[in-house]
Image 1: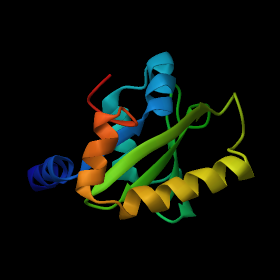
Image 2 (image 1 turned 90 degrees about the vertical axis):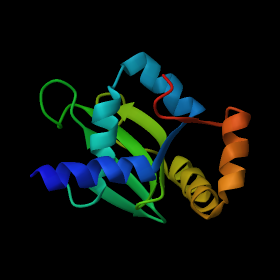
Image 3 (image 1 turned 180 degrees about the horizontal axis):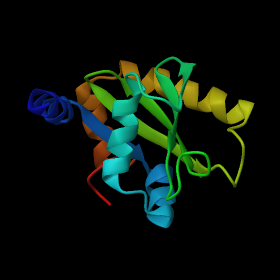
Length: 136
């Protein structure tokens, strides 16, 4: 088991985890702890409560207090081992799912995010379009 923990720690040291300005604002209101957000990324690689939306885009359930059924839904752009971006969050009680228009816009963002250079990521950080997850 200790070997598994080392792997997970290395995985997140190497991989960068970001959030959009809108997601950061949503999370400030909802106070989802970073460890739960990181668990959501880990679960993409084989966990339950994951919907693969294509183009490196995933809808992931995050438990609130009483299991996953009444919790949060997050939309994550994920490139295994390289980078992830939390794009959108909502409570299941607020809405059932994202709209077709929202999905189209997020898929377009996913393509851009997953194909851009590290220099471009740095520029996005400088202009506060995205933030590292640790910054809350």
